[in-house]
Structures are given as structure tokens and as C-alpha cells.
Length: 336
Image 1 (cartoon, helix red, strand yellow):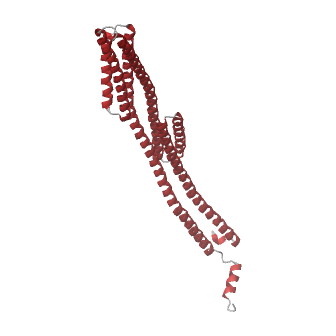
Image 2 (cartoon, one colour):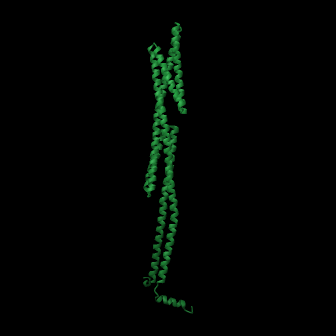
Image 3 (tube, helix red, strand yellow):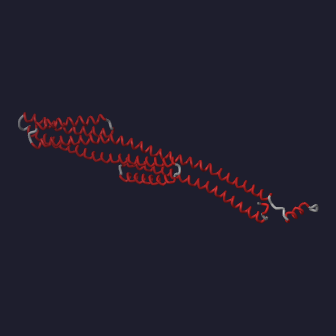
């Protein structure tokens, strides 16, 4: 085929072959670089997910420290960004294992936020119960104080009459003082429990409430005036309401401890999942970069070899025409 081709046709064909080989080399380079560019986007997205994860945990800790609702909203915003970015990254993944990894990361984010919300809701309920508990405690202490003052006044009046009345009023005044002291001791034990989370303080609160109710029952029997009986019964009701709120708060505190442990576990899994995702994508990026350079070099070498072979074939297959004979004679002439 090449023997019948004219020289200019061969030259033009040679240039055409060079162009074709150049296009092949360019395509190989393009595929290699595009693969690198695509794989670089994935670790960048994974790094961004790690950054958002860390920011979400920071806002969570800010909320726990300051109890400010703005941090709760910031955590929600970070989780929304994470789920949106993870969705975009999921669409870029071609490998099924990578897609499953992104899906697992999204699940971990949702689980973490669910644990955080459960902890926040428990904290809100606990704060409300604490307010009710303090209100009931203050009411009980106020009633005890009013009863103590009233019995003291009655004692002073009784001292002006007879000894039997004085003895009764003295017992009532002393009982009112004891009620006030036991209420104060219960409040102290309650605060110790809240600070140290030691069950012995909760048991002390229960024991002191029991003492208060027993003393109130004894006082009610011996009170002759209705307003005094109302004071004692009001004190007993307030103390029982206080104890009920304390028990509810204590139960919520135990639940909060479990919620916090679940939150910490979810947060650790949350971060570890995105760390694994980043490491996998980083490893693939390194692998793609390592394979792209040999691919481009191999394509270039193959193109050079093919071009050399074709050029040699075309040169050897040239037709010994008139021009070439004269040129050969000129080269082989003795005068030359």
C-alpha cells in the first residue's frame, strides 16, 4: 500500500499520524488528570464533613456549659450542612462500598443529633421540675417560719396564764422550730445530692421528709386553732410536693446520665465514621495519583513506538522512482 504512495502523500500521512498519536496521548493525559481531579473532590468533601462535625460538637459543649438556646440552633444548622454535603458526596461516589460509607456517616449524624435533642429535652424538663421543687421548698420553709412565729407569740401569751398551757405551747413552739430546721436540713441534703450525685444525700432527703410529715401529724392533733392546723397541713402538703419534685428530678438526672453517655457514644461514632470516610477517600486519591503518572508515561511511550514503527514502514516502502534513482546516482558518484 505504501509503495504506491507519492512522497508528499507520505509526508502528509506522517503528519496525520503524528496528530492522531498526539490526540491519543492527550486523551490519556486527560483521563488521568480528570480521574485525579474527581478523586481530589471527595477527600476535600470528607475533610469539610470532619470540620462540620467538630463544629457541631463544639456548639454542643457550649450549650451544655451555658444552657443557651442559640447553641442548640447552631448544632442543628451544622447537622443540616453535614447531611446536605453528605448527600452531595453520596451522588459523587461510584463504588458501592463508598456509597455505603457515606450512608453510614449520614445515619451516624442523625443518631448523634437525636441523642443531643433527647439530652436537651431532658435538661429542659429537669430545669422546670427544679423550679417547682424550689418553689415548694420555699413555701414549706415560709409556712414553718410563720407557724414558729405564731407559736412563739402564743407561748409568750400563755406564760401569763398557767403552767399547763405554757407546757403545751412550749412543745408546739419547739416542734415548729424543729420543722424549720428539718426543712433546712432537707434542702441542704438536696443541694449536696445535686452537687455530688451521691445517693446517701437523696436518702437523707427522704428520711427528713418523713420526719417532717410525722411531726406535722403530731402537731395537727394538738392544734386547737383552725389557722394553726391549716398552717401545719399546708406545710405538710408543700413538703410532700417538694419531695415529689425532688424524686422526679432525681429520676430525670439518672436518665440524663444515660442520655449523656449515649450522646458521647454517638458523637464518638459520628466523628470516627467521618474519619474513616476521609481516610478511605484519601487513600484512593493517593492511589489514583500514583497510577495516573505511569498511565500517561505508558501512553506517551506507546505513541512514540507506534509512530517510529509507522515511519520506518513508510520509509522502507517508498517507490524507487525517477527522482530517487537520480538522487541515488548523485550520492554514489565518484566525483562526489
